[in-house]
Image 1 (cartoon, one colour):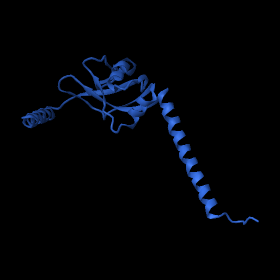
Image 2 (tube, rainbow, N blue to C red; image 1 turned 30 degrees about the horizontal axis):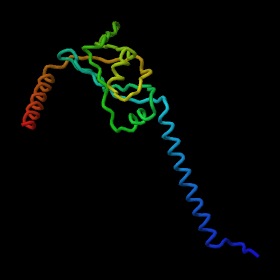
Image 3 (cartoon, one colour; image 1 turned 180 degrees about the vertical axis):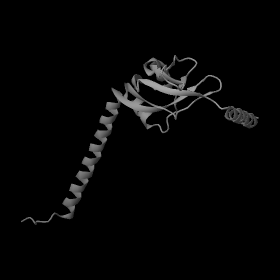
Image 4 (spheres, rainbow, N blue to C red; image 1 turned 120 degrees about the horizontal axis):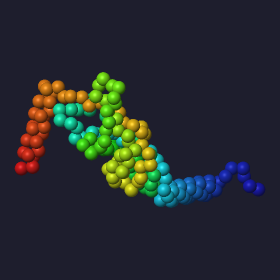
Length: 170
C-alpha cells in the first residue's frame, strides 16, 4: 500500500527535474534569441541633432531637435545601437547642406528636407545598418544673430578652453 504523501526522495527528484527543465528552457530561449539576431530586422532609434558651421555671428535658436531613424540591418547591429547609453548627436554641417528659408516668415526660419541626409547619417552611425526613413521628414529651425555682448563671451570662453587644452597637453 502506498501512502498519500510523497516521500522526501520523490520530492527531491521532482524538484531536480523541474530545475533541469527550467535550465534547458532558458538555454533554448538564449539560442533562439541569438539566432534571431543574426537575421535582418527593422527598428527605430531617436537621435539628437547638432548644427555646425553656422554663418558668422549666428546661432540656432531652438532647443536641440531629435530625429527618429527607422533602421534595417542585422539584429546585432540594431541591438548594439539601442543598448549603448547616451547617443552622440548626428551632425548637420550647414556649409554642406542645402537649407532653405521660409519666405512668409518674419523671423529667419529655415528648413531642411531630411531625406537628402540619409547617406550622411548612415555614415555617422557606423553600425552596418541602413536608415530607411527619417521622421520628421522636414527639419525646421531658426538662425538668429548673436548679440555683441554674447559673442564676446563666446570668443573669450573658446580662448580659455584652448589655453586649458594647450596647458594639459604640455
